[in-house]
Length: 177
Figure (spheres, rainbow, N blue to C red):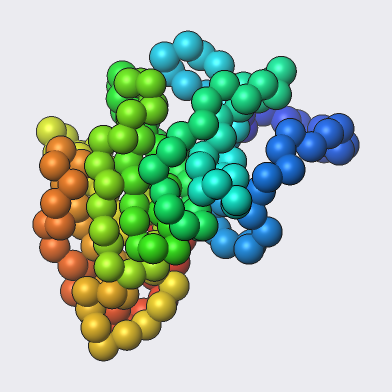
C-alpha cells in the first residue's frame, strides 16, 4: 500500500525511463530511497553519485535534480529515510565507516557525522517515547565487537550509547522498524 492506495490486482508496472545514470552498481542494501516528505507532501528519490560521493535529491514525478548533498568522501553503501511528526531524517553510510544523519526538514543539513568504526549494512532511527536513537548493523562477524556489533547511538548528540550484546557474532543485516 502506498499513499493509501491498495492495489487489488496487479498494477502491470512497466519501465518508463532512467532518472539518473550516476548510480552505484555494488548491489548493497538500500542504495537509493524514495519517500514522501512531510514538509511539502512531495515524493522524492535520493540516489548516490558513485563518482563524487554525493547524494542526489530528485523530485520523483518530474525527475528534477533539486539538491546535491555533500559530506561523504567514499562510496555510499546505504540510504534510508525516517520520520516522526514534524521530524524527517535520512541516514547514509559509506565505505569509510561514516554514517551521516541528514535533517530533511532543515534543508538536508547534516545533523551528525558519526565514525561507526565498521561497515554499516543497515541503519534505523527509532522514536520511542521522548527518546530518539540511531541503530546500525553490519554484515560481518568479528571478535572485535567495536567493528561488527549492532550499535545504538543517540539521535540528539550522535554519541555511542552501547553495543548490542553478542551481535558481533551474528550477521545482523537489514534492520526493520
